[in-house]
Length: 198
Ligand code: S3P
Image (cartoon, rainbow, N blue to C red; front, side, top):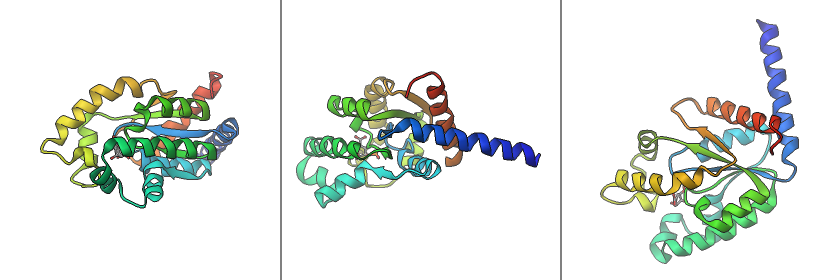
């Protein structure tokens, strides 16, 4: 038993080393809707791969000196999207890293192209129930500060899922411990490597 665990860990370490090597200066970029777990899972994935973790929304807030809520309220969504595009383009120059993006980022064609050029995209795909449970009552997401946030989420799923589906890898985001999600992502990255993609 102990030997089996030791072998498993050796396999895992080897998998992680191969993934790190294959990245070069590219990034692993997490995409998907609000509540998909991009930040929570991304942070743990980065730790596991011994890579820096970057949260695009935090970097946008730092660059603007304002919270996302304030940016939307004072300048509107279009202004936020312009900043988001610029910040993500800059962050992608700093790989290797695990980069979590805000839910709307991948809808921008320039951002999609930049991610393709500098990274491997991973869509964390969750169903409506999981997303709504996770976004809860927090007030930090301006798009959901409406009477019927579930209707907005449904609309965003219909608009965005076909675009998210263009990601290099899709991993189902389920109600399992974050470590399980990290394991699923590592396996998916390894499988992609074995297929010859990177
Ligand atoms: C948005 C998602 C948010 C944030 C902003 C807009 C979106 O990020 O960028 O509120 O358009 O889906 P998270 O997906 O990290 O919540």
